[in-house]
Image (tube, rainbow, N blue to C red; front, side, top):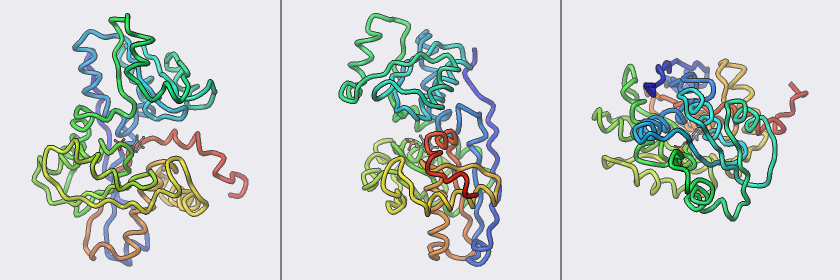
Length: 300
Ligand SMILES: *Cc1c(COP(=O)(O)O)cnc(C)c1O
């Protein structure tokens, strides 16, 4: 089977009176529309990894993640789509939630492991699959040169040039791929990384690891809202308004923080009038499932 998805990820304008007042144009690259489960950057990061698995005649994908991991779900769905078996090794004691339900629905076997053992993923793989010649190790989060290569293809699809690109960052692999893509096309577009972790300055080095070109980019460390998976009313209210205004679903873990950063930077006048700014919707809307209780659902 050919491991590929037909990419549907249009660039769409986002209108907002504040953007008009600042004289900037904002658009969004809809990687969330690539696939309902294998969404956004998770497909781009898996693509070449899965091709290598197939090339090596492996039929059982083994990967790792937290109980709300978009990567686990994407891997489960990609395994089902392309005819692999899959196992997800999940950090922490046995739990059940909506994300893990969807993983299981796609045929993924789940193996829970304590937080200490979880740190050494190659050792876990060895322990459970050391004797299984059909098993294929995929690291958590897909941080790899292959992952970055897949993400660089986003830039090949852009219909025009932009002054700025914004993207949410976890491992920084997606960011590195996009920056490489910009370099490949000799574009002057400035990349704006929005780390979703506290003390996100370290992301600079993580991104640098996978760069194939020297590049200067912005890192906006002030939009973590307390850290990974954390949110406050300010962020939640921003997301509610954005979704209701645009019909584009974003969530508090990644894309909500990225979009908040973009709005805040525009509002503060960081971009000169006439600037064109592209937000990358990196997918992951199922992240909402783990954050439902942050939304006071009966208040709106
Ligand atoms: C995983 C994820 C990211 C982070 O990607 P990295 O390549 O690890 O930086 C960003 N956005 C969404 C929606 C994700 O699911």
